Image 1 (cartoon, one colour):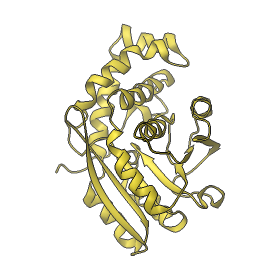
Image 2 (cartoon, rainbow, N blue to C red; image 1 turned 135 degrees about the vertical axis):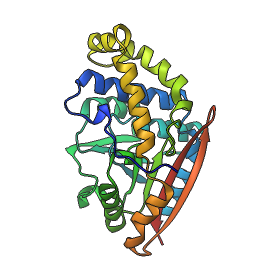
Image 3 (spheres, rainbow, N blue to C red; image 1 turned 45 degrees about the vertical axis):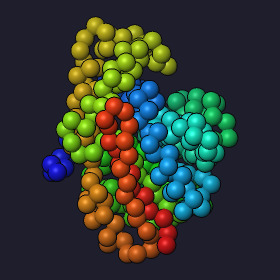
Length: 261
């Protein structure tokens, strides 16, 4: 396996235009749905919920909330009752979260304050499991380890999922859905449609930025070995499981979850 590289992504850069950063995350959210990318997580996530005994999940690093919302919809499609999911982020997206909550009453809610995933306050952690969907790769190994350590100290379990493995070609299976989602985004985006149309249709900026972020994401993935090394110093209070899952046409994602023994 290739060594992990801590590359930058445009959607992480405060200096990048807001319309570009929004385009990337909006297109990704639709690609997750249209490409059925998280459907394979339903089984492992249900297993995690049963083992943790939690009826509520604190979603960390939620971004626009799309990954958690798509997973909740996939659970319902499979005939399962989704848990109550609380969206959080260090940089909240209240407008996006309000729309998600309105469309999913009783399932999606959110905390509008900035929440540091490495130090969850007791008011949010008490009685809840945690999830990080398609976001842990944004964190350095040290910060990822802090997220896991805080979960061991203050939660009933944590579920980590990534849509890729650490492979530079790992994002290609999502390309058909991603290209379609990017093409229509200026028409359906909730704001800055003119700027997004310029970036998407009149220039290659959005396409190139999305391509780079997809490649960078795959090279930033924490492997099973990386994750197990992070939790090894945390003792045996949690039991940890690592799984892979498939999605069409030939995609492969991973999940890593821990629950108290």
